[in-house]
Image 1 (cartoon, rainbow, N blue to C red):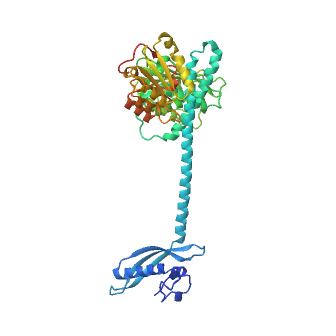
Image 2: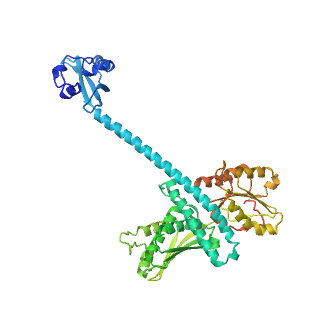
Image 3: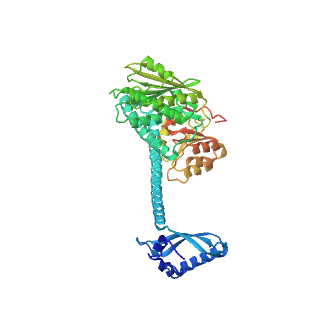
Length: 486
């Protein structure tokens, strides 16, 4: 009966007479009999039922850009005054360009998604590489630290050179782990729960990060940790505590004003009830008024053009959330001392604070790094000279260690003290799996990954202990007895 100009364009004509009286088979899209039959079938369905229908069809004709024409058609029944159906009213829209845009957007999405997958894969490779490199560094570094105790003949100056070199290597390993630990876990959400935190390890890691962060400054960082503070724990939120110390260290660096002999020292000490973290700098210091404002929680941003005092606010919030206290003493032109005090808690059962031996113990050491075995030998050598019944055996392969343990009687197994690394590169099992397979009563996992949640869960399940590998050189060794509750 008729059509509008848009329909004429789809029909490839500009004259309505070329449309009126035609059927779907004689219009341009009728070249595809299947399409024409579908259109006729749709018309008949509307006429018979009175129901509306919406279809999208690709026509054999092409538009001015050479693309097959896509139409979206809504067909409704056409009624006369009596209410009888006398035909079909079709409302069609050319959606060729819209569909082309959708196709291009989808292809772009797929391309971006593929690029994102490639980026994530590269990140995963970097994370894996970082862990591998950190592992490869930490084992010989731990060995070097243990051997340093037996190098008196080198002299103080030579030992100092070696000590500085080992600290630099430790900084590299810690920075690798901390950088990719953030990539791996992503941003934290919600309120972080309080848990036992080994303060000495956290401070050492943070110190490594600050050395890297301010490598272009003349500032020098030092740390002093008393022996009784090495294994001291506090119940706290680890991330906010780390940020608090970081913020205070950043403030200390700013206070140095790039002086040539700038020094920042972090000290860790304990008593029966408390853990004391002291940060000291030799910067410009503060007036008594500024120190008082700091203690009264009044924000100030002296010396920072774009500062808002948010760093100090975060420190105060952390103290409130973790039962901490702060004191500040400062002398203008001489420097500032900030002391943070937190309640000390009993060390959790999973930490190894001492290696317990009996004169008849069989010490089995499993580590894929050869150098660590020599270092353990040096640590145990004084006891081997005193007790001829004491044995130390070394393995680099987990299966070889298991094969040896299988040759022991139950009485001999009860005398085994098993020290194993967690990550055994290019082996089928890790240290935890070897411990579980061995079913030994006295086993210590010696690893840099002690804070990993999954590893800690396995440690709890197996009821064993863990020793941070960097503390293998300082852990006390007691040869008197092995407590029943280990």
